[in-house]
Length: 131
Ligand SMILES: [Zn+2]
Image (tube, rainbow, N blue to C red; front, top):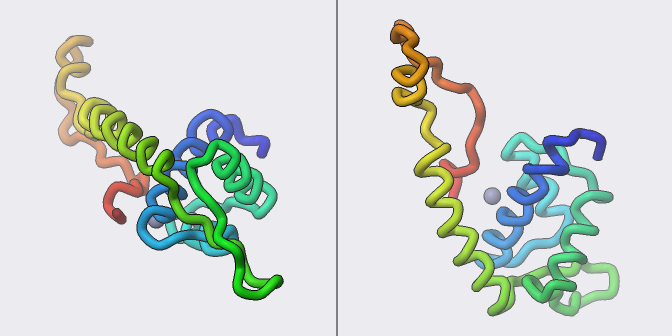
């Protein structure tokens, strides 16, 4: 992972994403890789599995015993993980309320800049629309 943006920000987003899906239906590594790909992120097994392991070590998710030895380990959220997710959701709501908007009328007036003809709508994809 050489991209500093991935390391500093996206890793955290992916963990939240994992908690969310682990709460809804349980996740396993390959499923999570594909899910993140749908969101436009290309995350390797070498990134996802250590994240899942670390989150399990924290006690936020727990692997169920696979029915067959070769079957995937499905992780489900624990009570502690659900608690973490609740806290994160509060922070997310706060953050997206302040930062998530693409309009920035305050900044324009602060700098005294004349209004642009149109505020550029960022083409960035957000995960918020796919809850
Ligand atoms: Zn998702």
